[in-house]
Length: 202
Ligand SMILES: *[C@@H]1O[C@H](CO)[C@@H](O)[C@H](O)[C@H]1NC(C)=O
Ligand SMILES: *[C@@H]1O[C@H](CO)[C@@H](O)[C@H](O)[C@H]1NC(C)=O
Image (tube, protein in one colour):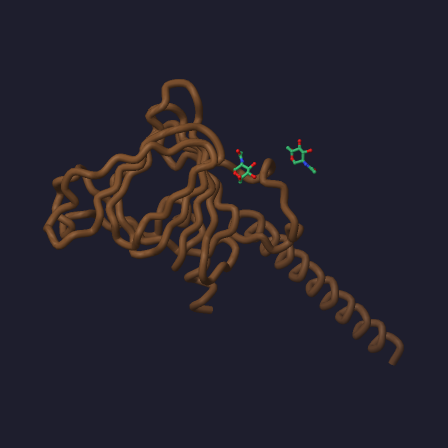
């Protein structure tokens, strides 16, 4: 009888230990995943200076997603902070979302080919952009942001609708719209987009 109880207690202790080990492993795993692919566990008010910056293979670019769909579960909008070193530019591209830029510092050029019924973007209009300037890109208008300055970084806060962004990229302004290459998920969504998809499936 006594030995039966103690054997039960031993089994129970082992089960509890197993449970604790699994729980700790799960917590560790979800925290490790959270630190890369979500803001779970981070404070509500965050310090932008401590956000990770990446160039996603584009020399002179520094991007951070301040509030994102894939990363943070935003449904309607997404906010980026982007810095372009002198000479750095975005691809010529379009997307079927609204986009608002607020230039925090630096200067540059916005190239914009208003949507038309022609088969390719054609010669873009050029706009000088400067500190404290703001502009929006109409849905599907082909555009490019270029730090045409020689010395200073161009930095902007960017807000888009309908995330995650689906980007169609053009080699040049005469490339037909139908030939533009879709990049989805976009570079900064790539790493965590898969994770999100897997979570949804489970
Ligand atoms: C935000 O982060 C930067 C860089 O780590 C740090 O210097 C600054 O003190 C932080 N601000 C606050 C209010 O903690
Ligand atoms: C941008 O303009 C607003 C409105 O006039 C002003 O309050 C703000 O200080 C300006 N910011 C910069 C960085 O110049």
